[in-house]
Length: 360
Image 1 (tube, one colour):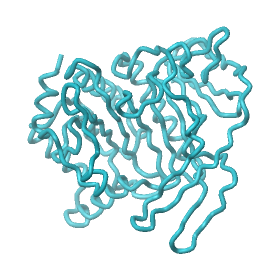
Image 2 (cartoon, one colour; image 1 turned 180 degrees about the vertical axis):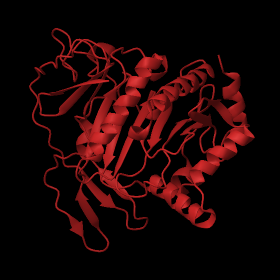
Image 3 (cartoon, one colour; image 1 turned 90 degrees about the vertical axis):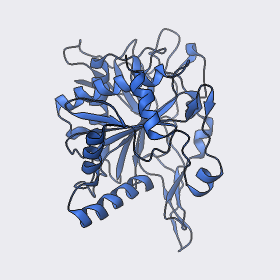
């Protein structure tokens, strides 16, 4: 992988990633007149649950569903300057112009009085563009291009883990308007949180309790059980297993686990990165064959926290969709939104059967 760094007009960092052996990349000059980024991001703690809530009101002005010829993630061209100041690119990552967390926060005065807890939303948010092809998707990438995205995630995880105050690095992709996407260009994001989010904490607490009781890894035993049962396995290869979880919350949900415990993306071997690209593209193709239109989804990487519980964590990707049938969506209604208690629409075993039948 080749890496080239540059700077956007407002001081944000941009990094081009190219396959090894590509022509040398010359970083472009961002000719836009942009004010330097400053945010008022803050975090407030819900004292009832202990969870942190980020408040970033400046995001209300972010770009929303522009037409294709005004896409800010496409390469720049004559008379049309975008977030990427080159005429082409393979994969590119840059600081989000409208971040939820930032190292450039202004005017946030910390509060800690026993009931109200507030501090600046210090961290970093990045955009990762998977391809310069506006009409493509992750699922349409070649295995080589998908592998380059994996290498980009790993590189960004290494860099963001070294940022002062960052506790968790979370690469993810939202695909489809049904999932809240505001830009149609194939891309994902990375949040570098200044705390360990609640779901990650709960998984690690379960793993800690299981190890104390059995002396074994909860994640490892889940993988072993799913492989042995086979009923919910969708695809697998030498390094990875993809399966519908036993207690799937979403009408379509697949988890991807490496067969060997790895804490995070940077720790994956070359063979494991190649194998992930293959099995992931396989499952994404199955997703898109299920219905008459492409499947909306969220793909969420669960990595070890930066400073704690790295011996407990087991890297995995959770892929899920709110689509519960042709033209039908699952909404988080009373039970899910009010109490966090999910009610599944499709049996996990039925999900697995559908996805296996959707194979090439």
